[in-house]
Length: 324
Image (cartoon, rainbow, N blue to C red; front, side):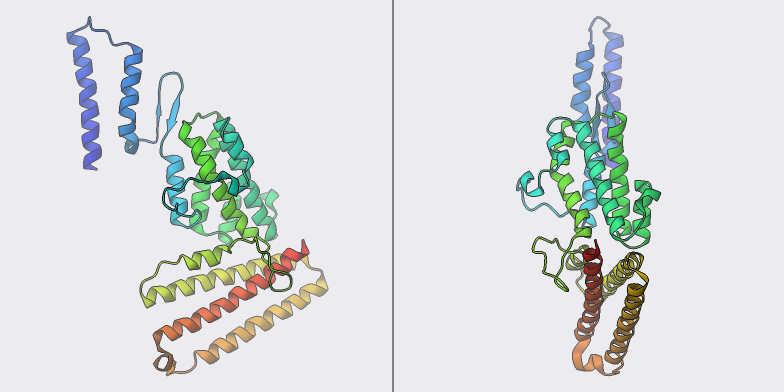
């Protein structure tokens, strides 16, 4: 805060000095180009003080919106952290249309990325049997988050992203850095969303070797813990996520099956839930279990039951995918 205040004081003082100079020495002319260049010289030092600056001629420089979105997306795991200073190979991302457009027209590229994000989100919704025509993209994000299909953090980041990209549809101009951002970050966002509708196989059909890691698996793998308590909380959280996934896929299946198969699925699900509870009650019924297996052994047992919920989710997901 002190640094910002000092910068403001310096800028204000400079403006006062220039104004006083103009009054005391009116013969010294300061043309518009000089003012423009002075503004450009000052702008880079003021990025932390504002989100955008309007300059003569209608040029608008955007500094923080896209960078903040990218940072937030990395924090929640929607985007992977960059490794070293390696350049992004656009070809590995199948060179999306918006990447090609970004090299020619930034506004259209940002708008195209926004469209691709919406298509991906509607694809996710359709997988779970949600009637997408009922929702705007913002309300669709809210619906997906309420069902646990995307996390609340993902909902927040994607909502901000969509709102920012919507500006392209209203003629807002962007600086050159945004075209680079679209090329580097856009494909990663789409890839992360598409991983939620992957066909993985492996239970009742051949495994898809090109399938991306399930987003819950990725979240669990990247779970940040140092103590046994944090490890236990991570297991508990992700078992809950897998249970929501089971419920979401189960409900989607029920909407796709005929009456006879619905009855079989219901019977199967009740049987699975009952057996899971029986086994869990048995394992954790031993009062001296921690003494025999240690505290870590308890967490390993908890993770085993988490994986059983995970397996059920993947089984139902595969059945759902095979119906399409």
